[in-house]
Amino acid sequence: MVLGNVLLRLGAVVSIVTLTGCGLAPVSTVRSTTAATDALPAWTAGIATSGASTPATVTVTPLPSPTLVPTPLPTLTPTPDVPALDERLQIFDEVWRIVNEKYLYDDFGGIDWEGLYPDYRARIMRAQSRDEFYAAMIDMVAQLNDNHSRFVPPASVEAEDATASGQEIRVGIGVSVQPKPDGGFIQQVFPESPAARAGIRPRDRIVAVDGRPYVVSDGDLQGDIGTSVRLTIARPGAKLRDVLLTRQEVRASILPYYRRFPGDIGYVAVPTLWVHDMGEQVSGALTDLVAGGSLRGLILDLRSNRGGWGEVLSGVLSHFVRGQVGVFFGRDYVRPLVVNPPAGPDMRNLSAGLVVLIDEETASYAEVLAAVLQAEAGAIVVGARSAGNTETIYAHALRDGSRLWLAQEGFRLRNGTDLEGRGVLPDVLLEVDWTRYSEDDDPQLLEALRLLGGGPK
Image (cartoon, rainbow, N blue to C red; front, side, top):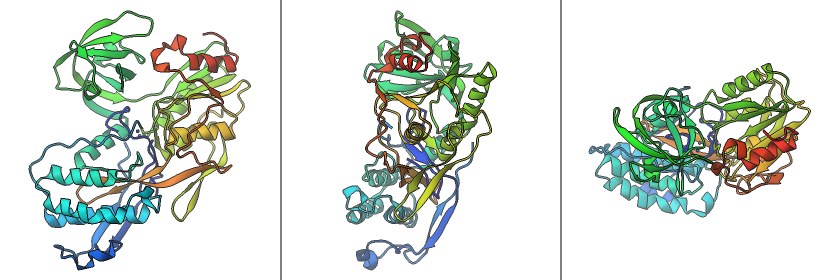
C-alpha cells in the first residue's frame, strides 16, 4: 500500500519480515479541524457525548525521516491505565471519520462502515484499560480487510519508525527471519552480529530452537541481552548443524546484496523499499558494479520484497526509465508517477537486457516497480505471479501518538492495467520455492542468467 498526502508509501513492520506489504505515499502534511460530529452517521446527532461540542483535530504529520503475508496486528504492551472517555471518543471519531471520507473504496469493500459505528463506539466507552481500548480500535480498522489499512498503538508506532530508519538497535542474534511451515528462513544477517560471527548466512533455515521446532512466535529470536539460544541450522546441500549464540545489542542495518556474475552480468537483491535510504543504497550498489567494468545485463531480485516508500520506488526506477510511467488514483483525483533522471548510473542501455525476479510475496510498491520495468523498460520478469496488493496507504497521526494507516490510492500503468487483485504476471513463469535452494542452484536465478547469456555461474 502507499501513503498519500499524509505520508508514506509502504510495501510489509517490526522487522523486514513483518513489514506490511504496501506502498507509502510522498511526504506531506494534511491538517483539518472539523467538529467532532461532522461526517459521522446522521443518527448520532442526538447522542450525548462528553466534550462533543469541542472540535476534534485530525492531524497528519510527516514521520521522522530516519511494508504482506497478511498484515499482522500490532503487539500491545500491557498497561493498566485507560485514557479518559473524552480522549477515547475523540480518537475513535477521528479514525471513523478519516476512513469514511478518505478510504479508496467508497463501498468500503462491501463492509457496512456506518453500521459498525454504534457497536464500536459502545466498546470504546466500556473499555477498562488502555489495552482494551486499543484492541477495539485495531479490530475496527481491521474490518476493512484490505491487508493494508491498520490502526497502530503508540508503542508500535515507535517500532515502525525505528525499522524505517534502517538503523534500528535491537537485542538478539542479528537476523531477519521469514516464518515458513518447516522453519524460519533467514533473509538478512546483520553485520557484526552473533549470527554473522557464527557463519550463519542468508538462505539458511532455522529448524529448531533449544531443541524444539521453530515456531512463528520465535520471530527474529530477540530476547534479553546476555541470554543464550541454541539453534539447529539447515543449509541447502549441507548437513544440519547446531550453533549456540548469545544475544547482544545489534544494529539492524538492512542492505541490498549485490555481486557480479561471469559474462558481465550484475545482480542486485533489494530486500525492501521500506528503509528510507534504500534508493541511495541501490544506486551505490549499481555504481560499484559499473566501476568493476561495464555491464551487459542486470538481474534485479525483488523476491519477498513487500514494498515501501514512494521516494524509494522512484529512486530505483530512475536508473531504468524516464517520464510518466503510470498514475495513482484516489476517490476523486489522479496524480501521475513521473520518474526523473537518477543521481547514479543510467542502466537503460544494457545490451543483454534486464531481468526482474518476483515471487508470491513480492507486494505493493515492489510489484509496481516490477510492472513498470516490464512495461516501460522491456524487462523480462521471471518467477511466480506477485501478490496483487498495490494500494497506497497514508499515515494519519493521532493525538495520543497512535497512527492510522489507510489505503487511499490505487495504481494503474500507462496502458490502464490495475495490479490490485491481479499482480504481475511473469514473462517466464517458474513456480518453485527458491528459498530451498542455494544461490548456486536457484532455478529462477539460473534462468535469469541464461536469458542474459551469462551461462552457468
